[in-house]
Image (cartoon, rainbow, N blue to C red; front, side):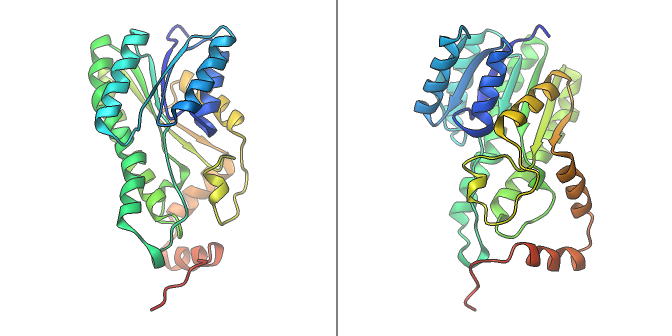
Length: 258
């Protein structure tokens, strides 16, 4: 593979950090963007100390102007953006008994609008250079409205549908849109979950799998396979089965007072 320039948004920890290290080991040139500047500064310094090429810039993916500035910075640094990976994401347990539209908006702004912001600025760049790979990290949680995860699940559903629309439409411009759907990966975010998480992968294993999927031009990179098949079944369950099953598997810790 000759296309070795990677823009990675959301690279300071978890899957993002592991992706930066995975691509660096495989001789890719990197630009890292994250709102956690100290985190990406440390990762970039480590990559450079080992002979890699990496630069970084602070960027909050939920902020339209910061994404614009970050992508322009990456374009100047790399010349060509062969692969852009939008990995930034947030999530936390939330229950309807304490539902906040502000919290919902925050999650949507990062997980869904972050990808939308990046698409707006990267499509013209990739069309002009005649090719590109746009990789958006969604989740296997995109199939249903899970208890305690309303904002996260709906933001990932929005992200997946946006990426699917982009994939179909941009193919004729030689832009490959790839949707990454991880299951449970051991990160600070999943550490907050209040339910069992089977078949959990390490960030390093996930990053290796994602890189290989991107290199193979897969339209969807999803893992692990037992959870992939489980979500296919869950997606098609009738509500009279799904609703009591969900209540039994994720009992709410907070009960409505009414």
